[in-house]
Length: 280
Image (cartoon, rainbow, N blue to C red; front, side, top):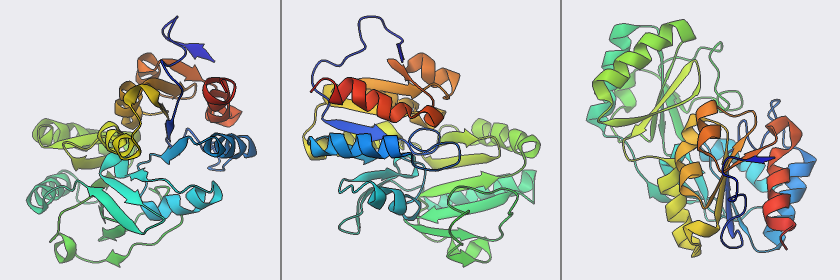
C-alpha cells in the first residue's frame, strides 16, 4: 500500500464513515465478494463506523451485497443521482434529468447510430426499446427490463440515469458528439468502453456522499472513500482520506491520497485494517 503524499497517509481524526465503490473495488474481477473484505467490513461496522456502498448500480442490483454485509446504512446509487434508504424502502435524495433534455440526447444519439442501445433508469426501474446481450451491464446480467417498448411510451417522467451502449468503435464518436453538444447540461460518467452513463449535471458521488455524511453527523475529515474508476474521482477527492485501488484508472490513482492493493488482492480489507482497525 502506498501514499501519493508522503506525510499524509493517515487522516486528521478517526475514520467514522467509509464509502466504498462496488465493481472493481469491493468486488473481485469475478464480481464476487471476498471473505476478507466481508470480515473487515463487519469488524469496522461493529466498531460504530458507517459503511456506505457508493455505486453506479441501481438499488436492486446492490441489494444482495448490502444484505450479505449486514448493512443498515444509506446507499449511493446511480453515481449519486439517488440516495436510497434500503431498510425503510424509500429514497431520501433524487436528482433526475429533465424529460426534454433526455429526449434531445436520445434523438441525437440515434441520429448518429440508429442501433445504439438506449437504457433508461427511473428510480429503481429499467426501461428500453431493445436489449443487446452482447452489451451487458452488471444489472442486466441479473435483472430484466421492467418495460420494453417505444421510447416515447416512457420518456414522460424525469430520468434518473440515461445509458448509451454500443461496441467501443461505434460508441467513441457518439461519446464525442454527446460531450461536444451537451457537456454544459449533463454529467458524463465512464466505467466501461462500451457504455456511457448520463445524469443530471450536478450528479456526482461526492455530492451524494456529502449529503450522507451530514445525515450521520460525520465531518469530511473523518470520511474515507475507496474507488477504482473515473466516476469515483469526486468522492475520492472530497473525502478526508481518498483511496484508489491498484487496479484503478491512472487519473484516479494520481488524485488519491493512498493506493490500496488491487480488488483481487482484497485491497478494501487492507485499507480498513490499516486506517481503522489497526488504529483502534
